[in-house]
Image (cartoon, rainbow over all chains, first blue to last red; front, side):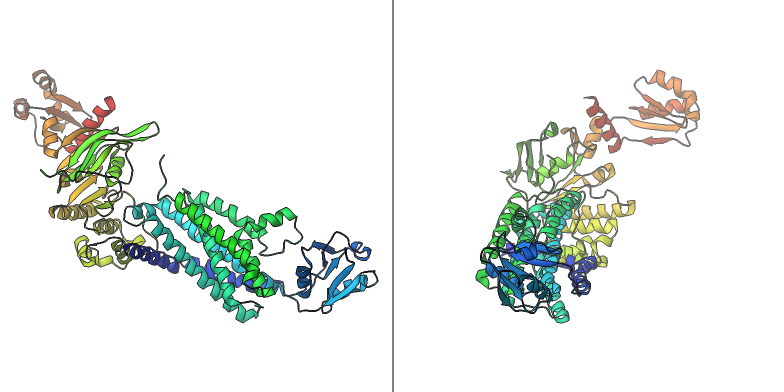
Length: 333
Length: 300
């Protein structure tokens, strides 16, 4: 009972600290909204200058392999490739082994490629489907990146600041336990991220009317587990870090690879295989991929279960390690 | 006989090669105000942190009410650190209430506000209160659990003389209620006003221990007579001849004679027709004791 009371006391203090800090509001709420709107304006045009062709095997028809401005993207399986053609994420899909190709009859780029391929000995497989706008595709990335910064800096950086300034030392001299303190930090940041992400999602949904094919509840679960995993990573990074300078370096070391490799802004389909595998180890990749699968492809729980499991595993490992390594103050020796 | 409230037994703390505290032993009785004095790096803060249970001793032990202290004195201690930060964007009222919620039986909010005089700035941001107000808030936080022992680590450092005097009054009122206090300070006057018992530390060891009066009378029998140098000059040679044990300290402006026999020294000056209008006679203070003990410690 006392533990809960102490936890609630620290939770309230942290919440107040955030709510009264206007600069945090600007960074956490206004920035992502502006980013979504800005990107929707910048990428509203359809002036693609090159073709994206998915390939199921190394063989491509001569009619295409000689073309300039064409990017060939390796596709894992036929169903995934067809789905991307349907959403205009690929302009065509080619199966060199079975001499077949798929084009979207409603896609202008697909039409051009179809004119080249129809004279080959490849069998034509027409599909149809509306294009996924860039804003629909990029929105999970924006929310995910914002969540990453809010989690890592909002928890990791704050704890290091508390430690350096002596706030933690003062708290240590009370009956407040490390678990109670850390739990309060996690919950305080979690509700904030959930509230902000939900608010930004609803506001931009109203403004941009983007696509959500899957379940909103499942999307919320991804958000919840994603936020938890990133907050836990922030706790782990802050568990012993003595100064804001070092914390800043460590946080940048984590955030930049996730910014670039998690598929937030552009797809890694054309990247080397090892880069794609490395990206899978990042929690933000799991969050964004799962969110996109729900929003764009209408994926269900079983489809994204492995990604949810990965997020849960990252959360548990980071929380346990972070709690074990946590120190209230910098030790002299 | 009841055991002391706190007892240090052969307490040692090392940081690699550095011996911060070197096998010290002392007792603190209930209701006492004990002052830890000493130059920077003497080991005062480390000693206090071991008493609080925040830093484990390398060897030796701390006993609280006769029992070996194994964890920190959470519920029983009130601690006012030398430098403490509070969370940002928090008012004085909110800070006090938050700390109250950490304890099983906190002192009532109104009692603390009244005792520490917080009423006038309760709704101010803790970062925007004055130095004196901030120290009163930190003292209130240290008292929030009605502690058996109150640790004050240099509580008036950085305060102006008026704020310091007010703070001393506050501490004295808490002491009058019978609270046990462990005070670390660089201000000798603070120690003289507030403490029943003093521990002089130097290089991790205790050089002297006792009440302020006892320590002064043990170490100093003398008084110092000071006059402007031109006034003292004519009598100086005879003073040295008649009182070979007296110590003369001269500067361009003033000359001081430290002697065990003030009456005879004064008589000699009168014999010489010395003008005593600007005569100052001073007994040694804790500052003198501090300087003397520090010099001894450095020489050892």
